[in-house]
Image 1 (cartoon, rainbow, N blue to C red):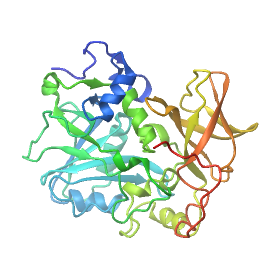
Image 2 (cartoon, rainbow, N blue to C red; image 1 turned 135 degrees about the horizontal axis):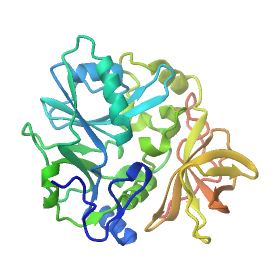
Image 3 (cartoon, helix red, strand yellow; image 1 turned 90 degrees about the horizontal axis):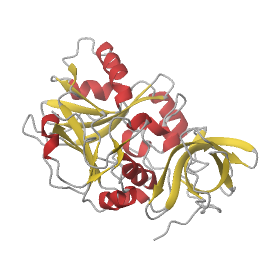
Image 4 (cartoon, rainbow, N blue to C red; image 1 turned 180 degrees about the horizontal axis):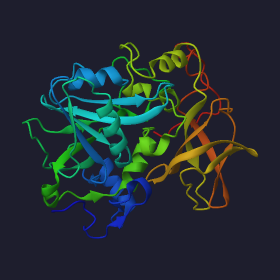
Length: 362
């Protein structure tokens, strides 16, 4: 039985959070175009799959996480966050329910600690938690290629990313046209025994990362650190319901949104590609000689060129000419504002456009 598609021709294994699957298959730019056009799939079989069964699965997870999911119907997708008591992000869960089981898709680094914590939180609830990663693999795609899909309870297990639009109860800090509008991303579960049936052209994780960064889409394994709160990444857009009942960390979510400002903010950086240096996760972002943040993700986009996401200090001037220290080279970086400096208490107050913002190519 195949455990991944690393045996496919040309496969070059990824590193870090994407070790165990292919970073590319020999032509990252073409793979990226194919993925964007909906004609390729990405092997995500290194990620983990948990199942929650039992009649209390939805209401129970609703009570301990950030999103309103108690009313999910068979086939529905959602996304929710597990926060610590101070509102810091501990886990990001991608959810699809089939009427019998709630399927939870997470980064492999989260599965063990998440399972332990969920079991501790069960108390007398009628919920059973299992790790099903050995049974099911995940494939990522844009569009809807013709592929096999697992349906153990007669409902196809396809998680459709809610990121393209603000979900009910959510809030978007980003202003103007959002690049996620056409980000029709989904993940489908497939029995690992069926991986050999995947004949669709393959794209590596480098292709997916480039399109994700261009859509301003946060990823737990990349953008999150021990201090992250959802507001900093504009994650209220898809994973937080601001009007639901109490859950751990809700006080911080409400206070920052209604009364304060997140201490940091996510930006997209358009990088000078003349030196061919691509930043790595953790590289310093500087304003003059002052470090104001760090790179969280970087990629070469087939249309935009070298781009990155970075988390920087909220007070960093949006008009500043930033730079990234990558491979010993100072790389010029133009900001594209995602989370504005006045996100939070002033989020609902109309503002004039800020100077220094990058205009996205049409």
